[in-house]
Image (cartoon, rainbow over all chains, first blue to last red; front, side, top):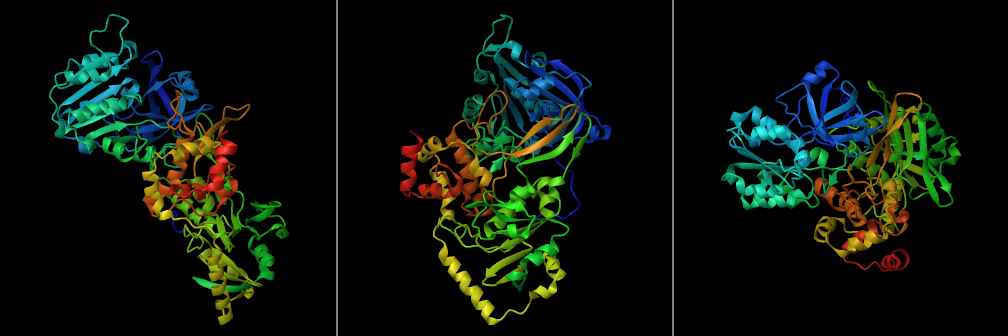
Length: 286
Length: 353
């Protein structure tokens, strides 16, 4: 028993905190924006997270699952999530209204290594709902714009209607301190004025990249990673400066339930942010 | 560490004396050839003539189904009824080593109070054993214990030599000091040395665990895994019986008639089909071969890379349990390039057809 912690009992890491839905609106047909605040005000104000971390959200009677935090710690007090209706829990979440209570615990995971990104050029490549976790880091960069070099965003979605925060991104294109390119796989509306094609077709539009000084981030559907990473490698961005955030099944978030195990690591503790070197070093990441 | 001598005929009086404020758990014979750890009502039910119980003693710290807390919309009330004071008697060295691995796992990073509280409230009274053909604990060096017990009973003829492993163990001895003899004579020492030598010689199975991390890496794409995947029934039995399997699932069980739920954790197994499946249907380990490989990565590679020893304590339960003979022995030997004759024949004739 000498290995077990004999000090004062720690708080039970499995107990959620009641949290209130402050604001809700639809981002696409099946993705909804949730703005949430912990019910206890002092906890709401002291909650702090790193961009790229996640939280466990629960709905009474429906269960609990991990969700990327879409908001930035540079705007404290409220937590934001972009949630796709995909299963029992998310269906229950979609039935809730503003002011309803949910359970929340976290933040968990390593998040993006912001300290190592400071002073660097940031290249963000997003596919579909990958915009949810990468929004936290994009907003963080924008809120602390002078701490980073060039900031570029490539965002691809299936159709214009499936591009979450479409208007926000379209207005980002007008900013001079940021390079933003958007693409859709298919446009049936005829109103799309930007690129048509998969997200990798946006790479030729990028201004010249200084690879040694660039940190590249990617998040999207599992099929996307290999193609985007190939582009990063073509640009000569070092393997440990290519970052991605991954999805796995999780039932605890704190390295106990086992579901997110890959090789000898747990995605919930050692991830969800990994480098391309991790991918080469460990099988089964992507 | 101190070692004292104790007469076997005093065992039940001693257990009775120490277990008044705690539940006593010990091995009992449940089927003609199978034992289980069970709460003891009558001392005569205790049966120490066993090799391995069906399920390892971690079930006492984390029962197969455990209510973690009761939730309403606004409140979360945790429950630790399973963590009452217990004395667990008759635990073999492999299982004590299994609990040490659990101790490390559940206390690292975030402390898991459901495990650690129950563990702190359980006194471990170990007991010596004799290997059968499936005991691999000498290969994993878990046939002996250096820590993780309060008292350890080594049976020698009509007497026990008892190792006192903790201050709490010492307290137990002091409740009935007249039963214990601190003066071991030369014969006692010789008897123990002879017993230990004979027991070391009695191990019939040996596996080279130090080679396994490299072999797991080198044979990652070996056809072996596909063959195993075809044979595996994905029943999860190997995980249920493994002393180092920690995986669990969490369920929200609504309480009828109330706006409340019991949040329940249940044992899970990485070989089960939906283990790595996320909402929307993406399954990161759809194939049985991939899930089996994860199981063996945990036991034979990952834990060794991290802690320098396998996540296997050589108890032989997977060997006794798997209906299609996929177990630590056959898999390790196959990785080692050995032809496991009966194993392969059975796979190709009985199972995959």
